[in-house]
Amino acid sequence: MLVNMLTGSLEQGLAYALMALGVFLTFRVLNFPDLTVDGSFPLGAAVSARLIIAGTHPLLAMLTAIILGVMAGLLTGFLHTRLKIAGLLAGIITMTALYSINLRVMGRSNLPLLRQNSLLTIVQDLGFSRMAATLLSFFLIVILIKILFDFFLHTELGLALRATGNNPRMITSLGVAPQKMIILGLGLANGLAALSGALVAQYQGFADIGMGIGMIIVGLASVIIGESIIRNKRIVWATKGVIIGSIVYRFLISSALRLGFSPTDLKLVTAILVIIPLARPRRGWLEGIKKIAMKEKEAG
Amino acid sequence: MLRLKNIFKTYYPGEPNQQKALAGINLDLKQGDFLTIIGSNGAGKSTLLNIIAGDIEPDSGSVIFHGKDITRRPAHRRAGFIGRVFQDPLAGTAAEMSVAENLALAKVRGQKRRLNRAIKKESRTEFAGILKTLGLGLENRLDESVGLLSGGQRQALTLLMAVLGSPQILLLDEYIAALDPSTAEQIISLTGKIVSQKGLTVFMVTHDLRQALKTGTRTIMMDRGEIILDIEAEKRKTLTVADLLERFARLRGRELTDDRILLQAR
Ligand SMILES: Nc1ncnc2c1ncn2[C@@H]1O[C@H](COP(=O)(O)OP(=O)(O)O)[C@@H](O)[C@H]1O
Ligand SMILES: [Mg+2]
Figure 1 (cartoon, chains in turn blue, red):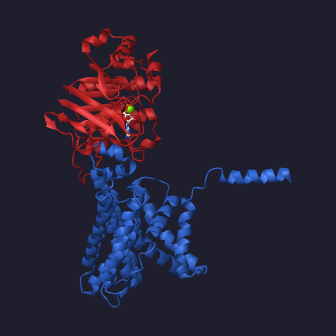
Figure 2 (cartoon, rainbow over the protein chains, first blue to last red; figure 1 turned 60 degrees about the horizontal axis):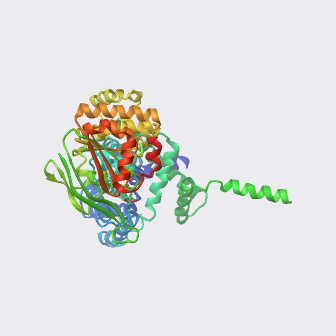
Figure 3 (cartoon, chains in turn cyan, orange; figure 1 turned 120 degrees about the vertical axis):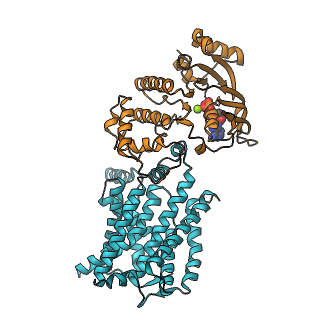
């Protein structure tokens, strides 16, 4: 039972890790609260499912998902930098628009991938069990993406992107337009989210219009859990932390299920999981309570 | 090399909180000129530097660089020839990135940034070499986050970054005001060395009148958005701080009353 729970968490954690890396890129590296993910993740699932059903090679379907995810991110970037719409709102607008687009892509609200070729069946055909195929392919994809991601953030362009999130005035004075970096980062992050959606669709065997709801919070939870496990702030460590965070998050969620929470309660559990580390109670809040208690004691 | 022609700038024009910041600024600088700028708080010194850097556009007038009108060119497209050090010692560096990464960001100033590894072995040697000139031991801290450095160390690093990637103009806006006197002294002398070595054209805003007269090649005094005094090389030598204050009073019909300046001038 525990073994099942562990492998399940590992498989799902890896599949969602790419989306969490995207959230890390926007929220942490760029310092931009991007909510597009709630739409670009199911977009990736919808596009890849639809294409796979139409007979497209799964790898090509996944590539297409990435490209469309990037475009969703670029749209948010455009809304924010060119049309001057606030960052949070720009993401919500794209996410809302994507809901309709995703329905169009799928043609209905749930698209099953029964008996379809998928990345997983292709690997299985090489002689692996379903579980081995899943772990192997997801692991390889995540490692590959992590290496590329880390490398990118150490290139000239990647450094400029990180500096944009850190100190936009300074990077402007060195010749970089922060707005371009924001657009670039949003594109990459949502490309990752879409790829993640494509993996999850193939893993669970269907794409669903509701599968993106709360995705941003899932991503944030993974990032935060990762940060509390791996304290090293260096990029290579931080991204390792995000991946581990995504896996641990899945483990916590399946533990919650085992404790008797119903699947529909999980969003609430996730929300609480995020509130606890993010909350910064007003300083002196506890002291204030203590003071009142003392006074009452004296009075009494 | 750099000409400012009849620059005007008013913040919030037509609104109740309207602020006239610059009113008809004309300046002409040659390569290698070192201008020191003085004037009381609100005189328009920072606005002038921001207009040169491209952070803000003037309402009218033009900025000419090597004969080209760059008045409407955005800041990031001027960065190739302009290096800056801000007054806030934290403003010129990225705190969460390492010393080497900050230098690497400055090294490709104004150039297209590519998908190359930003820090190669050679650049580490190069960075260690230039950090050594500071004498602060930063050459041994290449991989530390800049956020761990003191304000003085960060400002020294910002100065190095501001002259990396061969800019032609250096803008210094009260860049030592927030530092302790000995660090400030050290950074001033380092500035002198770098500037003469690279033949930079410098704008240095300071509220230290004595400093202004003994540094650089030319001093201007600003008041209410205008240049009221412009003193060239030779004449500065004989001028004292008392002379400056007296001439201000004569020209403007009032005393210079800026606590910071007067404190320094005593
Ligand atoms: N961003 C701004 N918005 C509105 N008013 C400003 C702004 N920056 C400067 N000012 C006003 O413009 C005038 C000149 O300011 P500034 O250039 O900062 O002077 P200095 O650097 O000489 O102290 C002042 O009256 C100041 O209040
Ligand atoms: Mg100022």
